[in-house]
Structure formats: structure tokens, C-alpha cells
Length: 406
Ligand SMILES: Cc1ncc(COP(=O)(O)O)c(C=O)c1O
Image 1 (tube, rainbow, N blue to C red):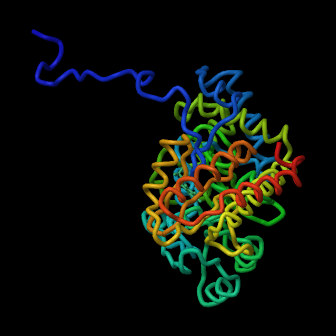
Image 2: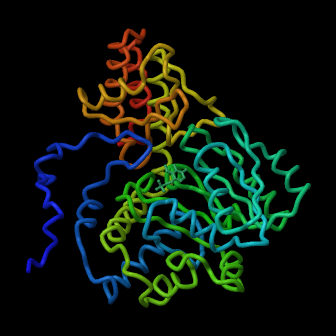
């Protein structure tokens, strides 16, 4: 009798080495982003998920995270999963039936909080502004006055449309004055621009690893204030998500005991990514991101294209560019990948391209390559493009800020 079921076919498939290109496409998308060599090396290793070395790695990740989140929080967790898993950890630990949340929604990702909150039976009110519009503090204040909320959620950067919550600190303060806990999505912004968790009074902030941190996708990071921890710790009802219960996660992240098998390579990679941030310093990293994005913006505009957002609430870390009327965005992106091995993002329904400016994307050679490829691809579709003016504007901004963008 055969030990295998002979009716199930044994497929013939190639090894990935035969399929993947020798040189990967340059990822200038809204994430994931290219990773530094140290990160890639660390992410190629497996060590025991418990024991002295791993304990040290975890201690270091927490310490490095405190610097990156700008907090003194003790309760910091790595989450095995995408940034959405960290969002889910925030939501499911602080909300349950009977608790009320105000979700500030200006796009797909900030709206995801509402789906998750509804999923755990919380009462959800959504303050929704048109996609691409910023959240206005006055409107938040009005909603807070009209109702009682246990929590308020928001994204620092709404990647789906490229809008920045420039007044984040003010909104957090309004929520605090109301007595509500705040949950902030810093998925595409952490380490690309200032975010001072403690000074701004944010209760929970989280990020993915595959964006500003320039690490491997699959592990995310979250920090809880003492007040948020107390709320989660004293909940009476059982937590519906075993993996995401921070009381259980604290076993591993606080007690060096088994919770579930940690995503070892992802954590080693994250350690290196965070260490590189420490080495660069946040001040220099913010400058690099700012001037890289401004240089690209100058190039895009000089080429004759329109940036989708006005400067006062433009998200520098994911730049939204209007697709000119007659251009076919999908074809342009395909052409860029095929001819120039550069990939950029489309959107979820809006007529924009999105170019990432996070982590390793913010390097001068990458800027030249992506802008050149975009210009050529658009010109190939008959769009009037001033390629030389675009490249010259990029170069000139970079030259002025050569020290910031090495
Ligand atoms: C602002 C923001 N929040 C949340 C997410 C979700 O991240 P993930 O796809 O890693 O779950 C993304 C992903 O692009 C994002 O940009």
C-alpha cells in the first residue's frame, strides 16, 4: 500500500533561483522597500527563539524601539505579522463590547481601524473626510464634544492617497483632554519624520517593518503607554485573539518565556534595521528623508507633472502624483519595470502614482533612476514631459543638500 495518495498530483515546479531575476527590481513602491545588506544578512539566519542570545536581541529591540518611537514605554512588542496585525493588537486589546471609539478616516488604512473595532464588538463612530483631505482638529473637537469616547484612532500618514496628518499632536491632545486613549498608525512614517510618542502623549503607536524601518516584511512593532497597558491588563472579558493578547505577549517580550515561536529571522533583521537608525541618528534620518522627498518633488514638478497634495498636508514618505489625463497608469508602471527595472505603486482607485520615500528608497541614485524611468515612460505615451528640466531640478536640490542625502 502506497504511503501517499496517488490521486494527488506531484507538481513539477521550478526553483525560484530559475525564476527570480539576478538583480531584483528597484522597489520605489509604497512598501516593501529595499533593505540594507546588514538587514538582509541578519534576516537569513535562524537561531533558537528562546535562550540567552534571543533574550539579548529582544532587550535590544525594545531599547532601540524606545529611541525610534521616542518613548520610555516598558511595554513594547514585536508582532509576528504585517502592520495590520499590530493595528489589530492595538484595537483588540483596548476595545471590546461597550467601549466606544472615534475613528478618524481619510483613506483606506485609517479606515481599517473601524473594521477591526467593529469586529471586536466596540461601538464605532467614524469621522470621515474625503480621500486626500486632512483631518481637521475643529471637527475632531466637535465630535468629542458631542459624544463620549474611550479611544480615538488615526494615521500619521495615509499611504493610500498620500496625505499627512500634520496636526497629529493637536488631535492627540484633544483626545487626551476628552479622557480617550489614542492609537496612532505610524506605518509609513516612523523614522522618516518626527513622532514623539511621550512628548505628544500618544498611548499606542505601531509600525510595520517593511517601510521607513527598511526591514523585511512580516514583523511589526508596537508600543503601549502604562495607561493603555493597565486598561488591557484589567479587562474582564476574555481576549478573542490568543496571539495578539498583550498579557500573553508580555510573557515573551517582558518575561523571556514562551508565548509562541517568535519570527526569528524577521526579528534579527529588525534589530539590525533599528540599529542602523540609531547609528544614523533620527535627526539625520529625518533630514535625509525630507530632502530626498523634496528633491524628487522638485523633479516631478519641473517635469511638468502635478503632485496630488498641497505642501501643507503632503505626505513626504509616500508621494502621490496625479496621472496625466490621457496616460494609462498601469501600462506606464509596467514599462518602467520592464525597461528600467524600477517599480512604483498605483493606487486603490484614485488616478495617482505613488512613489515611496522610505528608508533605503531615499538614496540619490534611486531618485535619478525612478524619475528618469517615469519621464521616459510618460513621454512614450505621448505625454508632454520636460525630462531635462525634471532631472536638472532633482540634481540641483540634491546638490544643495548633498550632506543630507548620502
Ligand atoms: C498607513 C498604513 N497603515 C497600515 C498598513 C497596512 O500594512 P500591512 O500591509 O503591512 O498590513 C499600510 C500598508 O501599506 C499603511 O501604509
